[in-house]
Length: 322
Image 1: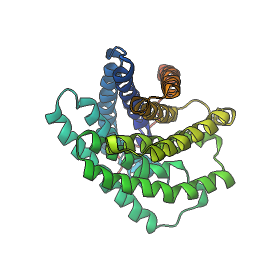
Image 2: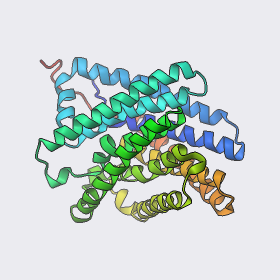
Image 3: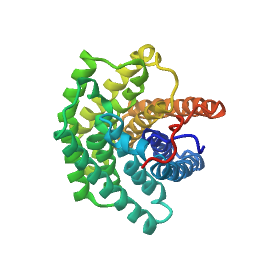
Image 4: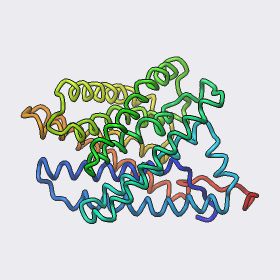
């Protein structure tokens, strides 16, 4: 491992495991599934975060030049938002067991999330960007991670704060979506970056869950179904685009797909819980099953890469940078 680097994008594994664990918790409440599997997924998510946090800190100590370059890269810098987002999901994983420990973890991740998003916003205002840099990872600092922040705030009981976060993330999504979608339709994505489309699915599904968590019994059916409709529409497009997406070789970035699908399953399960519609239960169950299959597929692919020593990219030949 000492000759390997951890890109910030690899925290997508933590997100995928944590969100699948959250989906299992919803399934336990809705269909009384045994809770153990969900808690094991949450434990793996926490352990992966601790490992990745150590590896990322080590990169700053030993390969500082590579770490600095990542923060300045117009695309890769967006993935740094996954670090506080992972911390927020760790707080949700701990919440049922120790609220006194989970609450400060949430606030640490929440404040870091907003601070990083604001810093990236200022940086993007002050620098020119090429069209090729307008890609789905731009959702991460301003939309997807902020909406996860809003969802967690609602889960911890900070509803007013959560609505403020929902406004920041939701309006950012509306502003960015037309720009990013236009670029995807006119410029496309290269083979090596097509797993970015896993991130493209994140804003509508997180908005669907966050809205229902924050609104509770006052949730509007019209808004809930509208968000669900768009989320399902995006996933239908991704399903039909599978041959195009699969032109990229398997990579750790595939974990981004597990996050989106697991969050969609949660949103549909919340709807099934709050609406007496058998079709919602069926749709939620199918989506949850697809999530589990996808997680198994991505986990198996990741283990194969680890076995070949090809999971982590190599570190620069030069050691410590000044």
